[in-house]
Image 1: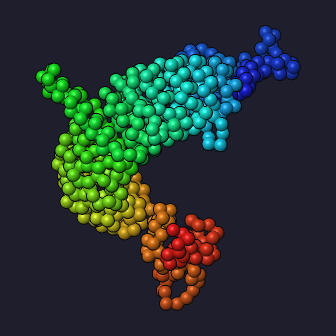
Image 2 (image 1 turned 120 degrees about the vertical axis):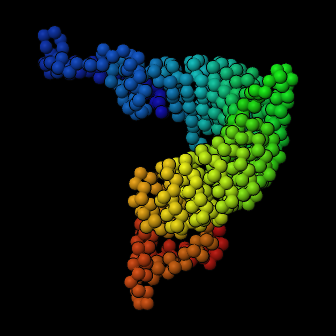
Image 3 (image 1 turned 90 degrees about the horizontal axis):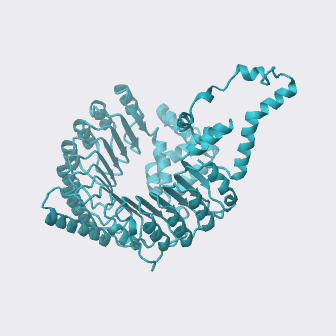
Amino acid sequence: MGQSPSTAFDRENSLSDRFAFGFFSSSSSSGFLSSDGFSDEFLANPDYTAGIPDECLAYVFQFLGPGDRNRCSLVCKRWLCVDGWSRHRLSLNAQSEIVSSLPSLFRRFDSVTKLTLRCSRKSISLNDDALVMISIRCRNIERLKLRGCREISDEGMLAFAQNSKNLKKLSCGSCMFGAKALNAVLDYCTKLEELSVKRLRGIHDGAEAIGPGAAASSLKTICLKELVNGQSFEPLVVGAKNLKALKIIHCLGDWDRVLQLIGNRNRYGKENFFVNNNESNVNSDPLMEIHLERLQVSDIGLSAISKFTKIENLHIVKSPDCSNYGLVCVAEHCKLLKKLHVDGWRANRIGDEGLAAVAKHCPNLEELVLIGVNATYLSLEAIASNCLKLERLALCGSGTIGNAEIACIAAKCMALKKLCIKGCPISDIAIEALGSGCPSLMKIKLRKCRGVSCEAGEWLREQRGSLVINMDASEADGLEASVRNGGIHEVGLAYPQVVGQVTGGGGGGGGGGDASTSSNGRVALLRSRFGVFASRNVVACTFRRWYNGDDSFQ
């Protein structure tokens, strides 16, 4: 919802004046004014919104998009004023040129609580003085998002934090300030509930530690992404007493120790609670969501996570050191688990053993996503039988999930509403099983399942008219996806005939009518996807080089 500079504000005022009063001047010059000074056309078309209270008009504005709302603000001065004080969310292109326009902008939008400042890489962002000016004029700000504001330093963030005591959410990415700025926010913003940090350039090796400060009790969500020295956030993560969601994505360093410290804090908190209260109803482990992606974390960290018995949402994504042992520990202790995402990264360390434990101990499971996990009939049958609340299931990139496994899911997953199958060796037999199974199924998505024909998809649509089916149009989609994902050798081995059909052009005997029809259809499809180049030999030469292992394309 980008807003224009102060020049735009002046232009809006002038336009509103013109909309409100320009009509009379033009009418008077034309001689169409009535005896009381108003034109006949104006009297015939009165302003029906004049009797609507400002609060009701502001409520109507809430249902409009940014463009429509901006246009409405040009209708008259009243609408301009109502739009200003009723707009709580503002997004600005935070280039340095906007500084002179900030006073007029925040005079108009004086009720903003959610502010986004975004600057592109090629531009110079606003500086500390501009940020301090915003904090003074925008006292009600509760959520701030900074993207690419490289001219803001630690001192600017310190001044901003001192003026923004009501701040509840801070999200910063690709900025240059560091630990001093974040510590200032955590010290002065006592109501801070959510902190998200991504690619913060000022956090480097040797940086000072970042602690929870005065926000230790209020902080509920911490998200750390793509940080070189994410370990400096260890005191913050450990010291946040009421943390409910922890997301650590692609941060360097060993995170087992951090997770152990959190787990030990939780265990000691429980022991102290039992000693002081002698009660079994403990609320010392509020952590409910953990997202670990592309981290150096092992079963030691998963074992520490298992001490948080109220976890409902767990993501273990592309962490190859995690195995069945860690997943079993989590399943045995976190029995309230509702969402589980596992991306095994084809490391083949998480399989039937871990999934069987999930099926046994987590009956409330509602969403399961398995990527690169070689699950078999044994574990999937246990999940389908025991997790009766399962509504969403995704099976991707597994060579062990075939027709028998899908037939089992179709027969036993009565509550399943959404199913995604990608890159699994299934055929039309599995689709036939889905035609009569999963009575609650509302949507199915099929990708890169080469054994499934288009005819099977059409048959499934006929069998279940209300079912939304999203699947590949033909084999060419699978080829295109393989090229995008870098599957060069796989393309060469799987499609040797396609090259011949493209280069063969026309002709000739021995193929029969069916082969000719198939060839023409594939050539037409390739032409539609690759444009004019498909009619030449460029595509064929490219595929032939891939097939021969040309190093220049690796």
